[in-house]
Every structure is written in structure tokens, then in C-alpha cells.
Length: 334
Image 1: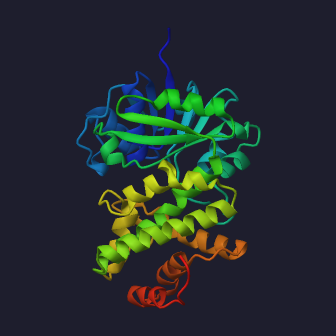
Image 2 (image 1 turned 135 degrees about the vertical axis):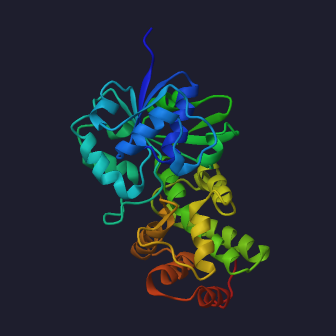
Image 3 (image 1 turned 90 degrees about the horizontal axis):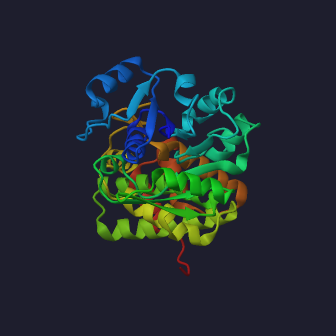
């Protein structure tokens, strides 16, 4: 029996961690990278110095620089790229992907121009592919812990439940537990919007506002996520599961979270670089804040935390003034 093969795009922190999970399950992984130097380093040393992972990357993971080579014999293609790269990568895959290959994405955000969810971006760019078989994998999962085999639980969702089951079978093991979820829309929206609240939580801590403030912020932030998510077609219960509350909790207080760290920096009066990155990794919550602000206005959903964070990130409002404006809004029933 021939060894199973999966392609993972790209060799970022999350892509590398997921490649290791697949390798632990006796799957041969082609890990694609834009960088020839990164490919050479991984294949020679079994490590990627950029991410300072302590764990040796398994031998079943082979880094490749050719996208065509990565996907040509894979039974599944895992897209672990930033949301900003999803259009480009999906367009390149359009001429390479075969109908039988399973597409799984793990990106958390919206396309900044069209405001499409990532599964919609993939479906638009690869129109010949059955969109019902596009799977999202999401949930509370820091790459830094996954690669060290620390217990992690996530969900997979797709319009076609059989596609979700295929994805589950690829990843499930004693360290990486996978649940099925039938709400693709809700899972994608929950994963995107929690990054906004993580930014705000980090900003609260950077300002030194204390535990009371952050608890209120996360709780009211979840309310905003639910209100917009349901309006966009997600199921309310999804936002209280792993993809929603679970991911929100892990992101709003961990130093592994680049969104939390970016918010903390802003609260301290520092600036995130012009590419919205920390240590070379994209802070997805920044562009997602702009997308959520637009969506909330288009759909008539009140999102005061998102609105104030938008003013801070894109209009130069001082964080302390944003806090004051949130605290002095008219009193209301919870």
C-alpha cells in the first residue's frame, strides 16, 4: 500500500505545525514555501529558525519550492497562508488542483476588498472545483503548542459532511483531537472575528486597565461576534463552541497570540510595522477590524468595540479615549 501524501501551503508557523501533525499520522507531507532559502534550511536541518520551534520537524515532511510539485500527487491540499495571500494562491491552484483532491484551509479572516470568507475566495478562484468540498479547520490552537504535541482540540466544517470526515481522518490523533461541525459559515466568521477582540484585549492590558476591564471586553466582544455572525448566516451555537468561545479564550490572553501582542504594543504606545506583522507573522486582526467595521455598517449590526478599535487603528484615535467612549455610552439592558 502506497504512503498517503498531503500538500501544505505555506511553510509558516501554522503550516509547519500542521505538517508535523500529518507526519505523526504516517502521512508524507510536501510543505511548500515561497523561499528557496527556507526550503534548503528545513530539508538540511529539520528546523525553521524563523519560528524558533524547539521540536524537530519530522522526516516525513519535505519542503519544496515548486507549487506544482507540492500538489501533483497529494490527496489533500491544506492552505495555511495568510488571508492576504489567499487570492493569489487560489488562482495558482486553479490550473493544478484535481476534482478528487480535498481542499482544506485554516486561514482566519476576510478578503479585504470583497469581504468574502476564505472558502468563498477559494471557490471563486477555482470555479471548476466542487465548493461543497472546501473544508475549514479552526479552533483554539497555537502552532507553538501543537508542534510540541500539547493537547489541542479543533473543528472541521464543510457543506459536504463527507469532506469534513475526510479532513478529520487526516489530522485526528491522541494529541490533536478533531470534531465535526456542520456550520461552515459560523466557523469561518468566528475564527476571523475573535482576532479583533484579541487585539482589543491586548490593548487593554497594554494600557494597564486590569482584569475587570478585560473580562468585560471579552464578554461583550463575544456578544458582538455572535450578533454579526448570526446576521451573516452562522448558527448561534457555533460561537459558543471551539471555533468561537474556545478560540476567543486562547487568543485573548496568550503571548503566543500575535493579535494579543500587537494590541499590547498599541496600548503601550508602540506601532505595528506597516505590513501588519510581528516577527514576520501577519496580525490578521488589523485588516479584519476594517472588514468587520464595513460589514457591521452594511448589515446594521451594532459593534461598539469593533467601531472604537477601527478608530484607533485607522483614524489615529488614542486608545484611552476609545476606552472612555466605550465606558460612557448610554446605559442599557445587557
